[in-house]
Length: 199
Image (cartoon, rainbow, N blue to C red; front, side, top):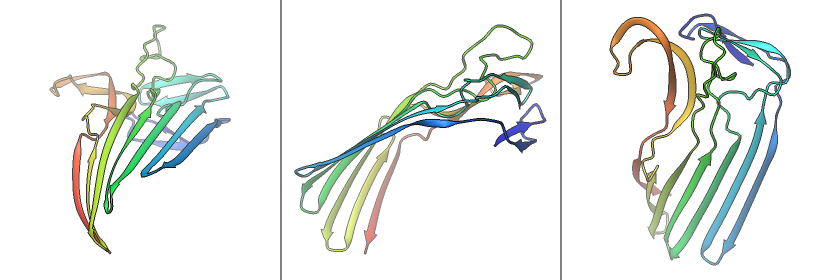
């Protein structure tokens, strides 16, 4: 089910079905315990493509779909690796890494920015990797002190991209002249959580 916009901003539209959009691939996972160390890893490869001719109406764009064209917003490869170490009785520490490959931008599936131009420009959202850290301490039975650092290296990431028109320039000033721009959904910056759990 796809959203087809009927406005240049992409805010108004309707939902419709598109013939033959297979999501096929492979998922692999592995877990192991080595002494006080718990390890896990998972890998996904996804081929999400259109397998029919059609037309996508996205903002001001009319994207002509051809069989084999990748669907926007879905990474082809995803990797997750995790490790937890029971350092001492009641104290543990761990880390995980999540990595995804680049994603096609909505409205740029065919590589074009304008319908009437033959030039192509790949506006795919780049892949990224994010590391998270965690630790826990149980000083008493039923009492846990927890700490977590998400996006430990504070990498700038984006999880989604869409091509649309905007009347603002790169500094946020009104120009009154709508032009094409790449909008992205930014990933969360570094965050630190400390908590207390009582059972």
